[in-house]
Image (cartoon, rainbow over all chains, first blue to last red; front, side, top):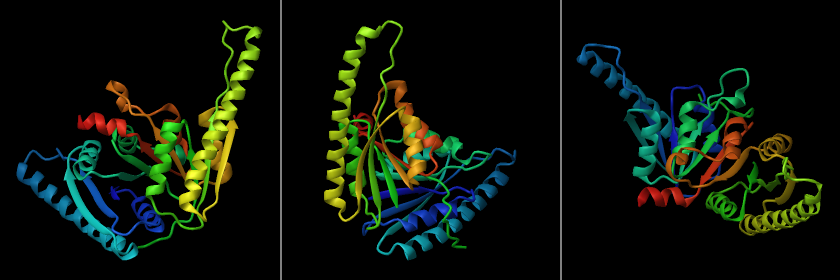
Length: 148
Length: 154
């Protein structure tokens, strides 16, 4: 099975990875850790924009490497890929799923606000609606274990 | 892990069950296959003479629903043994009933199917799936039909 795990900068990433680890997976399940960096338009100087973009990409790769290491360790015989993309999160997640022929996309619901279950997040909501493959939305569980 | 499998009909129910069977589950996982029969509402145009017809239709729906969940539960049980698999039919409004059952049963995951649609509506999922994705207290797995994929490939 080919599974995309969408990683963003939210605090739910760690509990989400933990939930993935707690599941049972067939041997040779392939995971793709995917982060999408949205374009920045803050600087009029293209060199500055490039510098910031590279820095963000380096940082994203560093974080994905750490999660890849953890997944590979905790889910033996799995194959973990990394993908850092630039663009709109919804479109890039959908593109990645089609290009890689993913069978499942795993995303977190952003549990913000006074009623946690009400906030799905616009990216998750759009991906659930538009994806051609199965999508799983994870929510923070009370039994979360810290890996940091 | 407690997995609530919400089934709408035979076609999409089988898709959801097939996807569940592609995954690996802990031996202590529990599954509940659930179908909700929604009530027939009497509209202004229908008078009391329709009651026998409605009662008969509801009876038929109950028999059909029981057979639907039991067949899918057997399909799961055969492949996932020794995991317990329960089949259940509830009457009520689908969104509220499914969410209530998930909460009452303390489900860890709700599995729902969604129809493939064309045109603008391809950007929508069913209203029941949408409500579950938005309001569920736990993780939700939305299994897509092959129709969408085939349409995209065409």
